[in-house]
Image (tube, rainbow, N blue to C red; front, side, top):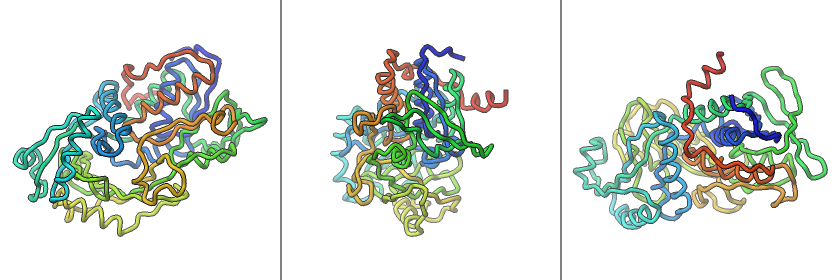
Amino acid sequence: MMMFRHDAHVLIVGGGGTGGALAHDLALRGIRVTLVERGELTSGTTGRHHGLLHSGGRYAVGDHESAVECIEENRILRRICPGSFELNDGLFVGVEDEDLEYLDPFLEGCAACGIPAERLTPAEAFRLEPNLNPALKVAVRIPDGTIDAMRLALRFFATARHNGAVIRPYTEVTDLLLGGGVVTGAVVRDHATARSEEIHADLVVNATGPWSEKIALMAGVDVPIRPSPGVLLALRGRLCNMVINRLHKSGDGDIVVPQRGLSVVGTSSWVVEDPDELDVPEDHVERMYSEGSKLIPAVRTAERRAAWSAARPLVGSRGEGESGRELSRTFKTFDHKETDGIEGFVTITGGKATTLRGMAELCADVVCRKLDVDEPCRTRETVLLPHTAYYAAAAA
């Protein structure tokens, strides 16, 4: 276990992928870290996404910042998490005439963002994926992949704990300790013991994704977050071996992600006030069937394994877009001393599973500056422990 090189103590609120990656980053910099999560690790948005290792292709037209973030982190994650992905690549497929209008902007966007993209003929695409829509007109191959959402995050948690971080699931923040314009820790309730306690820290990081606004309000500050749920549909049977995307502007049911013996079709998009109040509208489920079958006709008749919804934490103020698709998928760190005059409190939010490490690096840089810690980021090259190390350490 690593010896702490600094006296500072950071409390991270949120046990999803971003919180885990931040705990890992700060522990490598020799900072004492405690992370709390109100449920099991990854039980929020991290454990509910469709499991796509983004190439950035989905954002190559219209959101270059997010596209560049994705392809850069795609390459880093392949290096530091060997064995955690199906590196099966992806296809963007055009099945209607209007899709062809998107082809040139898509190829140009990929080139501008540094995303490898290879145009394929229908015959070439069918050799790779014979279940594609027979009406296929064109396909583009890009370096997408498939993630096991929980196992990827557990590698960060396992390595962080190995280096001294304290990880506390089932520990909910019920209030922040605030006095004189300074956050000095949090009041937490341990759901295993039903006891409350105070955890004191030199700095508190809010890494709760779509719940960021709820935690921020405990400090009397506002975080411009739009929780944007989407419905996902898991079907029995592996209908494709590559990630299949629709070659058009982001829309409902325009991606099929293979996950072991399942196929996950996603997703719809709307906005809500409370990320704990999510439903699964049946008309959204029907759109997953109807739109997904335009990519792979077998989607229409495949047996349903499950349907669920997950809330994305999109950076954007209220009233800025009605569906959530209008907002960028990039991420941002808020130092609330600068934005709201509240010291000792930082929020990291936005982004996606593919960019969890990059989000953590950005936030850790801010944390270190505030704590006057001069340590570089080491997560770009540090190979993570396997996900099994998390449970092995717990058993020991």
